Structure formats: C-alpha cells, structure tokens
Image 1 (tube, rainbow, N blue to C red):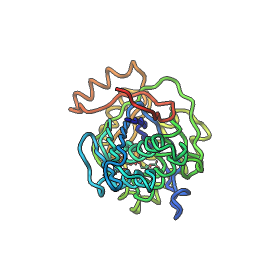
Image 2: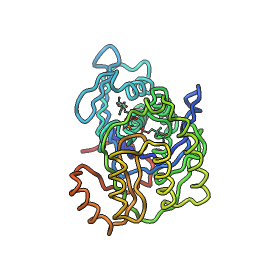
Image 3: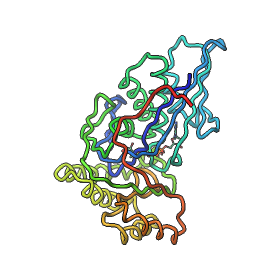
Length: 303
Ligand SMILES: Nc1ncnc2c1ncn2[C@@H]1O[C@H](COP(=O)(O)OP(=O)(O)O)[C@@H](O)[C@H]1O
Ligand SMILES: CC(C)(COP(=O)(O)O)[C@@H](O)C(=O)O
C-alpha cells in the first residue's frame, strides 16, 4: 500500500523565535503564507521481510543518508512502532529547493509523520504533527513551520508552541497570486544561533503588534518588508531585485524567512509585466502559486 501526504510550502514573512527547553513549548510567533506547491511524501511499507526495522529516505528520487535528513529519519523512527520489522521507504518530492526558506524540512517531517501515522493507525493527526514539530525544533530546521502548515492560508502565529499547544489565526484575503523567487540558501540554524536574533525578536514583535491591529494581506506585505530591511537580512542584490519588482506591482515584495528568496502578492493582471522584467533580469526560475487554504492531505495513493 502506498500512502501519500501533501504538505504546503510555508513562507515566513516575519517571526519572533520562542526558544524553550521543552520542544513542544518552543516555536515562533509571526506570520506567513502557505502555498499550493510544496512537498509530496510517499510512504511504502513492507512487513516482515527482514529481522529488523529499516528506514530509507529519498529526496527527489535520490537516497539520502541519515545525517543529511536527520529530522525526517528521527520522525520516521519515532512514528514507526518499536516492534515493527520490515522496510519503510519514504520518498519526498519538493517543488522548491532545500534551504531556501520554503519550510522543506518541516514539510518532509510532517509528511513523513502523517503518512506513517495513517499507515500504522497508531497516532492522531495532532500527535503525529507534534512529533514532526519536535524533531524540526530540536534540529533547528525551523520553529513555526509545522504548526503553520497544518493550519493553511495566510496565517498569524499568536501563541508559540507545537500543534495542539500554539495558536494560529488566519487573515481573510481576496484572490492573490504568490510570486516566489528562490535565489539562494540561508541556513536556518546559523541565523537562529547568531546575534541577529535579538533584532529579529524586536522587529518581529513590532510587526506582529501592527498586523493584529490591521490584519490585512496588504499590511502584511508592508510589515514583512520593514522587518526584512530593519533586521538587515534583506540587503545587497536581493534588495535590488525586490526594488525592481516593486516598480511593477502595488504591494511591496519581501524576503522569505529564512532563505535568500523573495516573494510578492500580486493580482493576475500584474503578472505579465513582472514576468517580462524577471526575464530581462535573467531570472528564469521562479514560481507562481496560489494560497493553500486547507489542511495537509494524507491518504492512500492509487496511481
Ligand atoms: N525533508 C527534509 N527532511 C530532513 N531534513 C531536511 C529536509 N529538507 C531539508 N532538510 C535539512 O534542513 C536543511 C535546510 O533547512 P532549512 O534552512 O530550514 O530549509 P528550508 O528553508 O527549506 O526549511 C537542509 O540542509 C537539510 O539538511
Ligand atoms: C523562519 C523560521 C524560523 C525558519 O523557516 P525555514 O527556514 O523555512 O525553515 C520558521 O520556522 C518560523 O518559525 O517562522
């Protein structure tokens, strides 16, 4: 039996890290957007063909070693029952590159947890999601991606913590397209461990306060851009490209936390001009997606 889980990519607009020794109480406040593109995880299980439990993970069809996918491996080992003997194969396919701020590590972890929970019927949705959150936080892959991904939509994290503990709200929105431009990697772990984190906390709190007073997608983009520039994370070439895009659309573009990537909310009619400009700038790898307003999907996969 093949199980498939779809987890939306999640882009963070701004955030306030909330560290805690208990990973279920750790997380983040902030806001972000779930996309119609993301991570598909396929799980197949073969029972009793071997004397022990074997877990294999592949990213986009290529097998990955345990140390390169420690988050998903840890999740798989915890969700698969201890006494289980057999082969567990986990195939993760990403629409966006790893490490560019699209929450791939969380998507892979959550997809793995939900698909295995579905197969073994040994966890509830929230129990599986908490295991994904725990390993994501312990390995500093992210803080608030998992809880944001299970809520969908344009989200505001108003109380930090794991799924079932933190609180996520949603902003009402008209039809917007999301332009996402992956331009480079930025290690989430390195940023979370660095000194910028103090400025991130201050700027993130300010943005959250202002967003809750005026909770619109338009305000979100203005606050995201202020956060990105005031923290100094958005600079150099990335900032130059953002300014080019801003000349063509109504709302400011901003930086995807935490990756060297940009995003913008735009109307269908604004697209052709932006696409033309991106072509002129020599940027051909960008994505246009919708906002994903549902919960992640998990179920039996037939063909
Ligand atoms: N699906 C996954 N499962 C486990 N680990 C992952 C997965 N995707 C990415 N990682 C790990 O996380 C690192 C990138 O983390 P992060 O910067 O949070 O990326 P992203 O912004 O895509 O979430 C990668 O270098 C890789 O080691
Ligand atoms: C911004 C970040 C801390 C990291 O995001 P990513 O690099 O996409 O895993 C996120 O998890 C959040 O809490 O908002």
